[in-house]
Every structure is written in C-alpha cells, then in structure tokens.
Length: 69
Image (cartoon, rainbow, N blue to C red; front, side):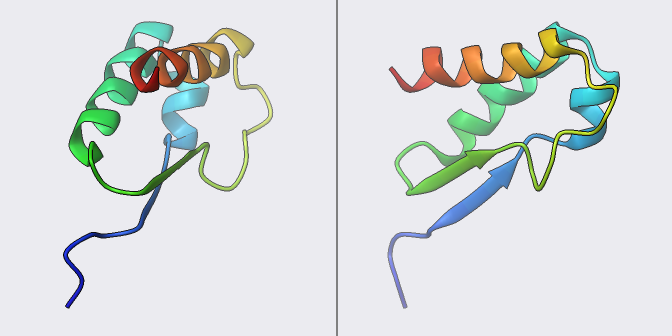
C-alpha cells in the first residue's frame, strides 16, 4: 500500500460556468487545502464549457497561483 496518493481534481465545469468569482475562489482554496502535501494535478476537469465567464476562469487560475506560491 502506498503512503502517498496521486490525485487529479478539476474545478467543476458547472461551478465555473454558473458560479461567481467568489464561489470559485472559495472552492479552489478548499480543494488546495484538502490535498496539501499530496501529489496533485489541478485542472478544469476535461474542458471549459462555452459561456463560462472569463472572470471565473481567471479566478480559478489566480487562486491556484496564490495558494501554491
């Protein structure tokens, strides 16, 4: 059994499309804290849906950069 997990997690496509930038920031911070110390890939799942507000995508990327710095 491995003592370290390799995880991949995506920001929910529905949240990215329909949430607010504040929702994105909050969920992204929670995701980072939940897996801190484990190898992890952060992504937008498998795509960014058409109609996703650019400010939501930028909130996701900016929060990751801040949280992982």
